[in-house]
Image (cartoon, rainbow, N blue to C red; front, side, top):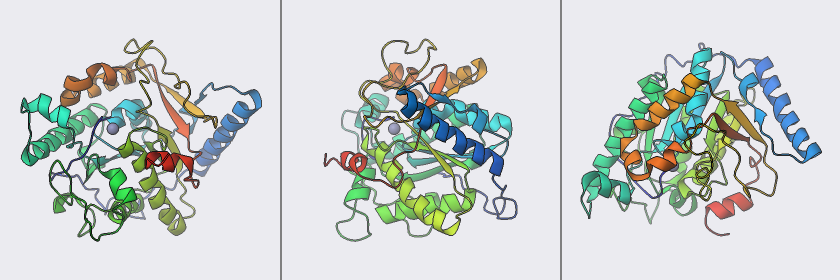
Length: 352
Ligand SMILES: [Zn+2]
């Protein structure tokens, strides 16, 4: 979530213990589960095209104790809004989960003003706001059952990801600087690699590094058609990193699910906040996306609500909107954008 822009800041990013994730201990992705997932995804496509319906297929059969789920979240709160139930389910089955935050959400003027009651926040106010959102994220994920070492903050600029994707790919003039925190790089303690700065190439390298360390079997990432620039840009960064990863590890080919957070007023409106089913938004895509639904148990739904309540700074600004994601199910899309960066990318970059 996050109606606005940029951020950045220091703070403790929790690193993965690379020893513990060494090749030897890396669970080999259960091939049968992968095959099953592929088959169901094919069925989802076939069913839709054969019958012209948008009824979501179900995700449950694809999740096993061998699932290694990586959730790539543009801002603190998107992971819980979109996948708070999925995270709990994979952990309960005995699988592994890593949550990666692209930004720490510190470029949100309305939020900072509301939080601090300062009408003209300065760079330090924005940095402090990022620290607050990171604390909230750690607590929210603890509620979902995660360990802090499996939560990674990359601290790229909130509100600036599209800029890095489009105009600042390489580390050369003009350099990108957050208009909020006035930073031009993550704090050294937050970076996985040395000398990381705010440029597209470094975002791609950092995600690549995470893929190499974690070896996910399933990735949940913001959809390419999400209307928030940080969200759709996150998709394209992950897509770019995956290309390099697949070249090196062709046998470890993770499945991609995408999630939608920003699309018009969805999912506000009928059923919001009542625990009703979350349905795909009208008019989302003419291409006929294949939706996949995960039904949440009462306990998972309750924990998801609790987790969202940990985002107090966001509840203050848009509580009703956040709670409209607390439903009886979560929706994902099978990735049909992969490899074709046409119209969705043009829209994301603002050229369509
Ligand atoms: Zn967001």
